[in-house]
Length: 254
Image (cartoon, rainbow, N blue to C red; front, side, top):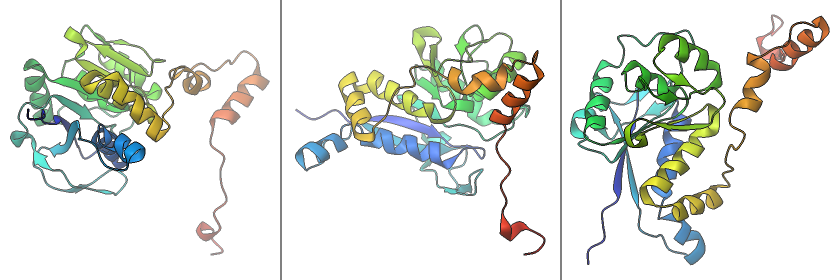
């Protein structure tokens, strides 16, 4: 009996994508079914997922941090993936997405209508909101962008402190919160698509610890500062402001 082919996952690359999240997702999905047997039995197992980086035109480009991203295919050549995952977008919280990514949004809407599972890491959820896919549903994104998401898209119920949210019909839209919560998102998708046991294998291989407390520990001081006491307020600002560093090669004496 022939083995079932690996399930296809399209990773949507945009000019604002961060390479670490995009390729981190690629590595983790590629590992499913393959690498546990390498470690335990000395030979690779059968890959269960087939990630593919896709973009509007399929052409390579520089990511927001200057890293080179080389897509595998154009959107037009990516037919009916089982799932689509959007990495985070390196944009400012007050930066509007209106009028941008129109081709990607049309593709996402069409795929979702066909039953594709959609997922977004961190600020990638903003594209779902711009597409209207979150209207009447729930969402999360990086804690620093939750206020913007709620204000710009009032039909969306935003959960600022949750690291993972699944919403919509059949919970076919899934979002991870900020930073490394893309790891939670990836494990959730692996568990949903190929099984919990494989997700546990990946968690053990990569030493991934679930963000059980959500985003609250990281957002609390920055979003809810206590200002009644001037001394405490000053301390909170000091804690949440990165220290200025002396860089000798940037000095006027250099």
